[in-house]
Amino acid sequence: METLEQFTKIPVMGHLVLGYPTLAESIRTAKKYVQAGIEILELQIPFSHPTADGPVITAACQEAVNGQQVTMADCLAAIRTIREQHPGQEIIVMSYVNRIFAYGLEKFGQEMRGLGIRHLIVPDLPVDSPLAAMLTTEVPGFKNTESLNLVPVLAANVADARVEKLLALGFDFFYLMSDFKITGSTFSLHPRLKNIIAKIRVSRCRVGIGFGISTPEQARLVTEEADVAIIGSALIQAQLAGGLDDYLESLQKAINMATEQV
Image (cartoon, rainbow, N blue to C red):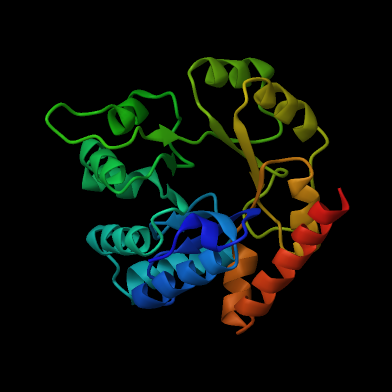
């Protein structure tokens, strides 16, 4: 069993699809991320039509659902295994509302709390909707070990009033899209992001930027603006090419070098 102190952390949220290429391999991949110092594991419960994702993550989800026949129960068991193996690791779970609704919103929320998950990303669920409240509200009679918070996913054109409303509602982690795109697109940082981050940071909330980060150098640039760089498609592509270990090492070097120069 590993502890948080064993690995030097780098400000990256590393995304992987549970069940891809197999359930066992996705658990091994999570271990590689942890050993590389990835600060946050983003574990995606696969859905066959992930609308916010590009072709790489979509293909991985479809293989997990259709090829590997991965169920919600399989995913919850995998998360439990990863939690047991890495008890000090921060984990954020991501999925789509269709998959969660089919399982049961309140039931899923309780499962997340029981697994020590504090943040959940559901891109197609408005975080201040009644359905979201059903997901995050504690249910009497269940053992509640952690509060569960949704992570707003915001584009660069989000209105200032919307950001202020979400801050007032107590959301403490924000996922910003780097630009107007889907995951795995070309990299760019919208010029308005700095203003949005400044507003969020006044409330001492954390900010992650994702969508289109492919190289270690791009990740380094993002960490100059946000708390974490969120990387998904590039990690899956590196794994497909047999170069995941090298990619993780280069990510460590690029970010650590930048930190040392500050």
